[in-house]
Length: 258
Ligand code: ADP
Image (cartoon, rainbow, N blue to C red; front, side, top):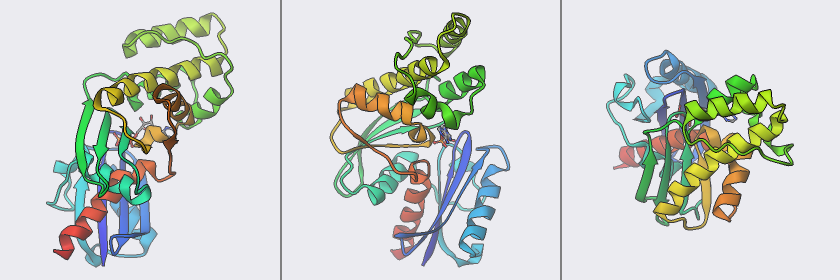
C-alpha cells in the first residue's frame, strides 16, 4: 500500500511516499510554501520520484501551515502530530523534538509510541526561527545552506545580544563595519537562535533522547550551539526537514488500514 504525506510550510513544500507505512519510496522538497505553486510541484515531483501515479495512493494526509488550503486531500493533521510520528520512525527512542522551521519553532515532548504529550511554540517573533537565519544570511551574502560551515570555522563567536530580528540586523551590520570575521558573526547568529529555542525547550522540560527537525536542523552551527545550550547530544538525520511529511504519510497509512 502506498500513502502520501504533504507538508506545506511557510517557505517550502515537502512530500514523502511510504510503502506499507514504513519504506520511503519517493521524496520531494520544493522551495515555495503556502500560496505558491510549491505544493503542486512537490506532489508532481514525489510521484515522478517514486514512478507512481496519484491513483496508486491509498491515503493522503496534508500537514503544515498551509494544510487547509491543500487541494490534493481533505485529510489534514497538525504539524505537531506529524513531526512526532516522523521523528519517531527514524529515532524510536526520541522523547524531545526541537523543530525549527521557516517562521516558527516548536518543542514537542513525546511518548515511547511517538504520540505527542505536550508542546511549546514560538510563532510570534522571527528571532529563533529560520526567518532570522534567512535575513542574516542575506545581509552577509552567504547561502543559508553554508551558515553551518562558516560557524564551524569560528574560534570566537560574536555576541549578538539583541532579541529582536530588526535590532540584530543592525548589530550584524555594525559587526561587519568593525571587521569582525564573518565566521564569528555567523557563529553568534547561530548561537542566538539556539539559545532562544533552548530556553523554550527548557521551559517545556527536555527528556533524552533529543532530536531536531525542520529545515534549520540542517544547520550544524545551530545544532552545535543547541547541544551546548542543552548540555546534551542532539540526534540529526538528513531527513529532518521531511519529518512532517513522513509523519503525514505514516498517518495516512494508519487511517487507510482502519
Ligand atoms: P517551513 O516548513 O516553515 O517552510 P522548513 O522546516 O522547511 O520551514 O525550514 C525552512 C528553513 O530551513 C529556512 O528558513 C532556512 O533557514 C532553513 N534551511 C533550509 N535549507 C537549509 C539548508 N540546506 N541548510 C541550513 N538551513 C536550511
